Length: 485
Ligand code: NAD
Image (cartoon, rainbow, N blue to C red; front, top):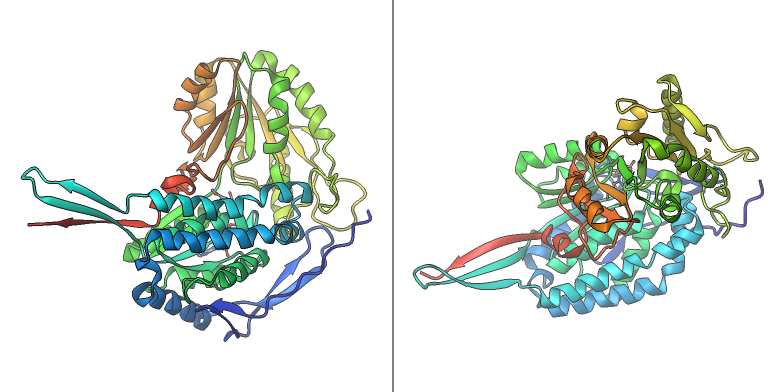
């Protein structure tokens, strides 16, 4: 298949540390490979321990001695609004970098990139009215002031699937709280973090307030263990999240975790399937299924299974898979060769366990390059199967059936995860009742809405803490009680 002409990215050469672009100390490099052509896109420097020490020392100095944590919130808000304005100027670059590195369709990345400036302006607005100091009274009438202070130097560690949005959640909220930040983007997708650093530099934030050290797992581990880091904000796999929580527990460093998911879409027996279809088409396999809150388990009433499958399979088999830079493409490739191997391993496991492939299951024809797989739907699945229990992180969905609402809730909750859910019903109050019984951090009635101005995060092994909304700011805050004797 012919791919459209791709932009050639400029490989980053330096790290942004202490408000300057500095030469790497480490000689290690990382590579980014195109998901659609398998060509090497860039080779760029990887931060080693000495670079990370330097970034943490800058952030430490900016926190302990610099103006940022002590500034009036309205002044910090002014800087954040400048970052938002500068990010807005770069939205096309951000969408292009996302599509180039991840393979997410350009039609989608162009739609979603606006979330980045939104997060910065949202937290700017929030801190102008947030009660950073609350006046209270003791029972004896004495004065008490409860101050909300920044937690300190924060490490922000992010995955590759939505590189800047997941970083913006952390950096916008952390900076708004008065923290200083060391960002470690994913090794496969560094470009957007560099765009953010350029905007932060142009916005004139005090030196050391924001630093980036691109690195792989070892660099991430070194950063998490660093005594100069007060808090780790992590988004990634549940396995890595558990490891990071253990490391942080050693010194009781604060930690917030946004981890994996296996989220259900529950269609109640009164649901309008045709009305549900558009949101199911977008959110059961967004970015080739590489989104933590994808609805990968669809629960339908047994007596309406055929009706549902006729609709859903018809739509899934019509998904236009192809070059992510083609505006007509609905699904691009998976991001990496190892991701495709993982997804194909799960498809094989589903087959071996006796599930039926109702559509897809292989590689699409006509692609001699690129990590493409077909959108795949399994039926005849049982709740214990690997494909139903484990996060695949690919375009693979299981359709399960249930007989009554009790069984629907039990099946929805039969998961180690609890990130997201959708409930479709003609009766919003009935759906609300069910939403309260589903053990997950977000639930949407009759659709999927993930809005950065409201909290997002996981129950159970999907994480700890919330990002977005006022709760996202509180991730970066310590509470101090000042009593007047
Ligand atoms: P990953 O856990 O392999 O890596 C995530 C980041 O952590 C990367 O920057 C990586 O270099 C770093 N890292 C890995 N191991 C580390 C360690 N031991 N110490 C410190 N840093 C470490 O995850 P991934 O494959 O990049 O991303 C996919 C996963 O992310 C999926 O499980 C997905 O569900 C999850 N995710 C969750 C959310 C959410 O908000 N809940 C959002 C997107 C992705």
